[in-house]
Length: 122
Image (cartoon, rainbow, N blue to C red; front, top):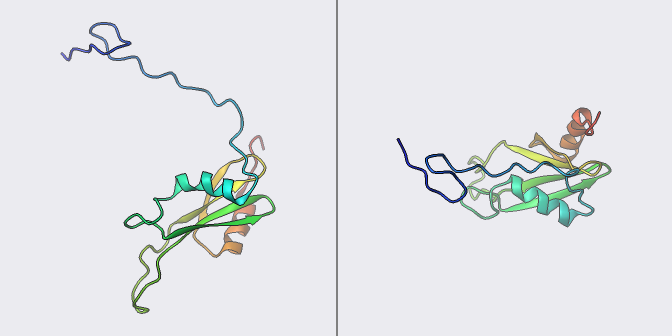
């Protein structure tokens, strides 16, 4: 039997887990591309990390912000891209919801988002 003697727990019992904080409101609503990029960075590997993107881009449209990664150019044009496939994200201007969309050209990804997006409460 393992002995637990950590602060905040009774002798012989595991530590009390942290209290789960309820959401107090909606997701943060970005008001510009910089704020959308700050939120979106949490959903991608660090820019410049091994295997990570070389940059992140924001495409603003009427109901959201599409965040997509840029990848280094391929020195050998006959080679394969370093990171084919994947997904992009859209952050809603209406309720802050974050959704994944396929890694398609910007306008195609936005069209897909429009077809599947349902604001919270709908």
